[in-house]
Length: 360
Image 1: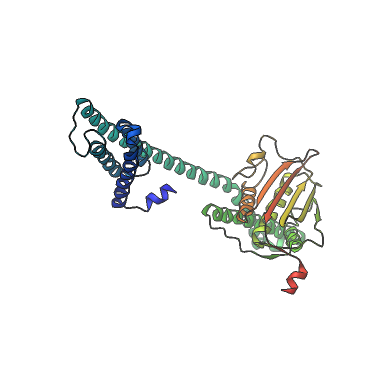
Image 2: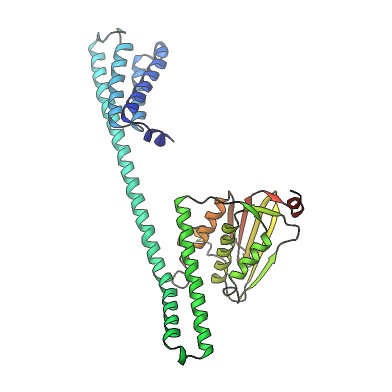
């Protein structure tokens, strides 16, 4: 907040506020001089200059240091209300105060400047690391489906007369699967870009959760063909005010993740209920679960279990977390002792039963 305030000030305003702060501290200290003594006031003014150096530019700090020395001399060092100093000791103290105030202000400012440069460098390095990791991760994930589409399309175009109907169907299926995979990777990239830029603003509308769940399951028909999916949504579950598009993507990524990381014939359960006027969705499976020492990394960007053996960019679950938090909700994950993992999503939202909607 202080940084944002400082960025809005020009040089003259910073100089003015620095002077005002020194004057305010001096005024407060003046009434306490009989109890503190003028030497203690010097320490208070030094602290003030140090604090100003943490938020103001160098010229404002130097001005504050000079002003504080003059104020201390005129109002606090005996005899007061003039710049004459009666003792050599006080003269030396004033000189040392002036030097210490200047050095302290300058050094504090330089330290702050150095810290900013370090943070800027680290941010730049993290950004480069992010994009390098992203490019390395995507180099295979995008190239593979594109190569599949190009190869299958080329075969269909150039050798169609020599390819049987069954082989043609197989090639078309390969194109379809590769296209869906490519589309999913592109969607994840776009979604992550939206999350990174902070422009996600959920468009809330009444959502029929049953319709949403079965629509997502239908989209994942190919990936879930070797798994058993159980849906547990009671008829009395109300309508929830959610961003349907974002929540479909949340469920899609969770189910897709389960289809990739659980063995064939695993059971994936989806249940949605209303608890304390909150939308509650649970997605669980009876697979192998997550490594106990890595479960806290699951929602990190590019996290994958056994990255050399599994497909994907590792963005799916970080997008899930981002979309849930965009709704003001929270997501939890834990392993099931008997085997498997359970994701729990809870979102505070408006609810309305169908009868209420009809009467509106």
